[in-house]
Length: 194
Image (cartoon, helix red, strand yellow):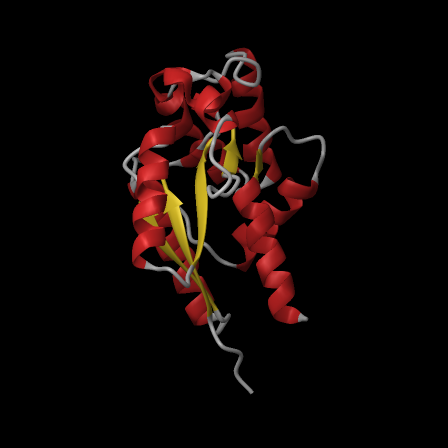
């Protein structure tokens, strides 16, 4: 007996998250997992852009499940008062799913522990965990760790191995990279198996 597919609209920052969601959905289709995310990019993670996109999606999809996934770095730095706005968000806006500290950190969680640990050391040298680096400060180095990468591209497949790595690293308290979206993903996958 087939389970009905769970569809979740995901307000996210841009083309990188959309590319990730497309690969994730392809994996779900191949494995016949009845789950699908539909990326709705807000063209950045700034609070006002995200809320505008969320409200548009809510207005046009009244019965849909809608989640918001953005990077934590601009909120921690309080760029353009994003954290101030987030703390004062209206009650009809759901809590955001954050990538701590940014999307590239989230991607490294899909790789083997050796690469992840090298990236963590690089982040420590930049004091990334207390003062998150801007992409211009790390993107060239990130490409050396992960391979042929540019925004909007995922340089590896989303498959059982990469998701197992993500789960292992997400659950490992010694690893400072975390992602609320990963928690949501594994929660949903677990619920589908119940």
